[in-house]
Image (cartoon, rainbow, N blue to C red; front, top):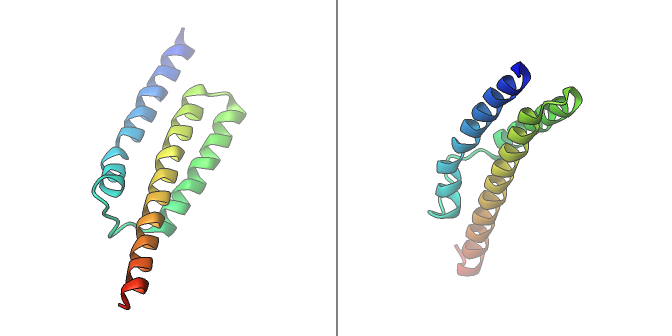
Length: 98
């Protein structure tokens, strides 16, 4: 019973961590804004999340596994969105002669 309670706390914490990325995802994918987003920082965060995921797998913690898979999905979505926006701006500038 105590283990279920502990994993429940982990699920809640992980869910809040993922929800925290939603405004950033909205800004990139819906509003098309990417200024101030540091891709090297996001790559570093991704590396940390992968390591936490491995840790969660090694200790068998479903809450750590789920939270880090979900957070990685958010980060990858942001990275892809930022790269897409920056590439489209580069192509636009190249096509207009700017």
